[in-house]
Length: 367
Image 1 (cartoon, rainbow, N blue to C red):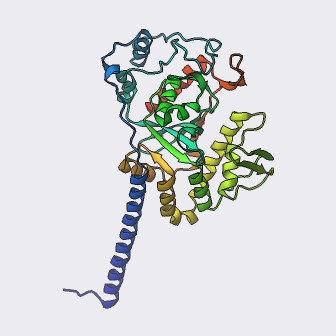
Image 2 (cartoon, helix red, strand yellow):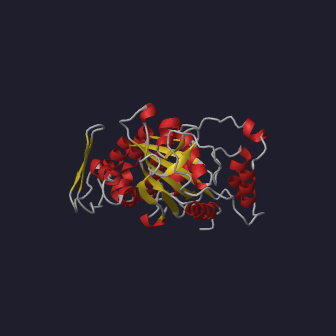
Image 3 (cartoon, rainbow, N blue to C red):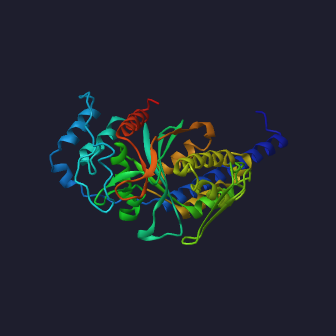
């Protein structure tokens, strides 16, 4: 029987030691990710849907149900945009395309159609505002395939004119200050007519720390941006062509909206920043910083995604490229309302139907 030479034996021992260390480091990394996922997990509160389940569907809900099941070619009639311009402080008792509180069995139907793609409501909030004063500064609906692939983002202007349950017609970001994430989630569902599977809440401090941790962004400011608001400490001063080398500069660039483009320009810049973050985070120098990024997420992110599911998503999308982030655009008009003289972003019923159709196709994996 041939005996292994001393040199070969040392080689195999060294190989097993290195392999064991790699396994230990990998398991330790997964454990850190899992700990962060546990820390950010904030399960959604259970809503009382008993009455909704027992109550008969109204005509509008029945029509929408038949549409989803493919049994009807017609869609519910909706109020015109002029009719929806009601004062924000008055509750409006009129039927809309997507009822404000759909029965539970109606809400769950799209989930039963497909499990291939999930929708995430991504919210960015100002860390300086606490409790009831908090409002969503960034609102995005993101479709995410379970097994990886292209991600589609739809930015919703925070000034979008919508009906908020119990508060009439007002700006969509007010829903969070009225009823927190649950009310904002229902408002988005009612506005677009598609279910939201999960919510992810990120505060500004966490965003700044992440950008600083990955070494800033290669993105440059497209023009000079200057805005100060002493009431909340906002101070934005960027020069045209200035590199977004810090978290503060990147956040200022993503938040600025005081120009002729208003929220439209800000949504476009937010999507630029997200792509730049993915590109920068994917560089080899940042691979070793993933554990630190997980710790930052644990302190500044809240989501109703269960820990194991969150870790699986991170692993599935760890190597996604910026070009795999697709954007959807919502068409509308920025103007002052004739009813309450406030600035809104108005979206027509026809545009809402178009977006609903696109999002339903994405949820079925038919992108």
